[in-house]
Image (cartoon, rainbow, N blue to C red; front, side, top):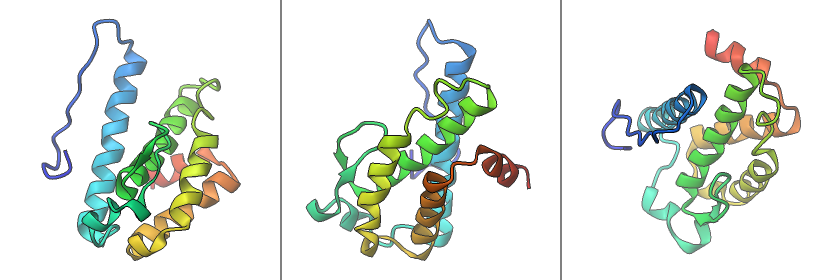
Length: 144
């Protein structure tokens, strides 16, 4: 919920494992972090513009065209979820979204006019991750 900071909405299923709970909570933590960054640093100067036809990009997770800000969130979440699985030493899912992430970031890079300075800066960090994936760098940044 982008307009209610700190509220996390989960819909756990009865068969969820502890890993699935962790993934859902981490997923929402990443969304909250991006919302907060946007509130402070204006990642998306005009959210309404992000929903225009020319701003639609493929969502990394849903694999459908979505407003740029929502697809941007999905890209950030996908990196975090791959990082989480890396931390769990679960290599099967640690590169789960990489190909779809690459597509999303390429499409957003072609539409940077919809981003503020912080949005562009974070997009550049996503690009660096795609070109040279380093989960250790993510872990370091979260710890420092």
